Image (cartoon, rainbow, N blue to C red):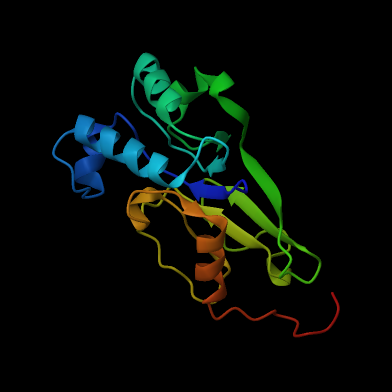
Amino acid sequence: MNQKIFFTSDHHFGHTNIIRFSERPFTTVEEMDDELIKRWNEKVSPRDVVYHLGDISLARPERTKEILDQLNGSIFLVKGNHDKSALSYAKRFEWIKDYYELSVADEEEPNGRQKIILFHYAMKVWRSSFRGTWHLYGHSHGQLFDDETSRSFDVGVDCHNYEPLSYDEVKERILKKDWKAPFGDREL
């Protein structure tokens, strides 16, 4: 089976108050953590790749390590504003960055690749946005208006049934948007 690529953000493992702040359907932080781990592992296999766009855990470093060790896949972390305990277990991640420009092989794209900007925070414009480059973000827990004319959206768990999204799921949502190249069909 082929390796899949997933995107997600804002798990907030170990964060009791996020249950109330984001109106998550859990009674305790233990229940939330267990369910988030279960949903992650139901979609992500050990050989898959996950780009996590920040705020993975607010638990103590020891508990964060326990949680991260239970998650399937190779995890690449784009730092959020709540990743101090995750940084204490840096070796669990393939890399840790503030921002990343990803290029994914996609035979359906004109040049065979789809560029994706990964950042914890939403941006109005980003490198090559006018060429159809996507932008995936987190941080906002589904509270930002989703601009249907922009090839960007929030991949946080609060927006997507508390589970990561595959590249194909992201692509399906992006391509439903009413995006048009601002300079028409001319060569850029």
